Length: 411
Ligand code: ADP
Ligand code: MG
Image (cartoon, rainbow, N blue to C red; front, top):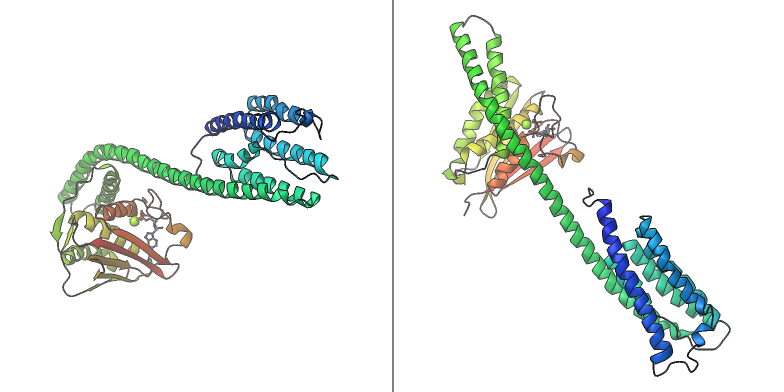
């Protein structure tokens, strides 16, 4: 996954979360202590007893000293460690305090501060799984350890409360994560589309500029050839190469064109026959047989015939290019479930390594010296525009099968 938010932005978010955490933590901590020691109906008789037991006033000094340290850490841009500092300091001082107060006595264990729950509850706000695990296991572990050392079952209730809150936090945290993941994916998708749109607009603009001079170049070359038929054999090569440039430009321009489809009922057999008639000569030159297998009465399909022709030309061209030593290319057409037509083009070429399959169809991905890496991208787009799918299945060294599934009717 690529990084989508810059670190300063994350730091800013963490700073906001930590400020909220610190405010709530101190408020909860002191309100609870004041209530427990001074206001509650079963407050201790000696209201200042809390200052004399265990670490006494030091507990509060240690916890309060975290405030200036936090401000310092924020200044030093170490904002991510603050939550751990609070957690560890609290757990350790609280553990020592409990040991000093209860160890060796038979007083029932009745400590605990509601502020502790904030560590667990805040892990979804910090969106941090590591913090969640440390906070949950740390807090539950602390109570269980105290229970074991003091042989006191009173730790059971706070442990249970922590288990419940941990479970809730865990669910929320996971929801947040999956939500963030979806957002990241959407963002990636948009970025990809944006990139394509920019490439497309540029391609269309440049394409227009290139096509016109290219057309006159081809015209003049043809004129030269006609007026000098015995002459240079290079003329036909020149014309071929000009055609090649033209087809690259056409592919490129497809990226940026607003695609108004001219959907009509078309006979797929006619489309395929046309494709065969123009690819047959090239195939034969390479010792390749083009075989077609049709079902008897194929239905008409609603499509843009020119665009579909372009797809088949691209696929057959790729198949031919994958079979330098000749072989068979099979084109199968049949009606499949839910009123769709399956057209598959199967070659006996060198195949596509599995790790490259995911790159197929991304713009400019090519493994050929003279490739453009646009053919399949355009084909994919055309098939998508026809509400269909293009699926690759390939075995290295054995061949590749491309399945096109398109709905017979668009309605
Ligand atoms: P190009 O043909 O210009 O390279 P494409 O988009 O048509 O661009 O194809 C992209 C890449 O996919 C090719 O370079 C090739 O590596 C691979 N590929 C496509 N079709 C086949 C096939 N039938 N057999 C093997 N590899 C293929
Ligand atoms: Mg190609």
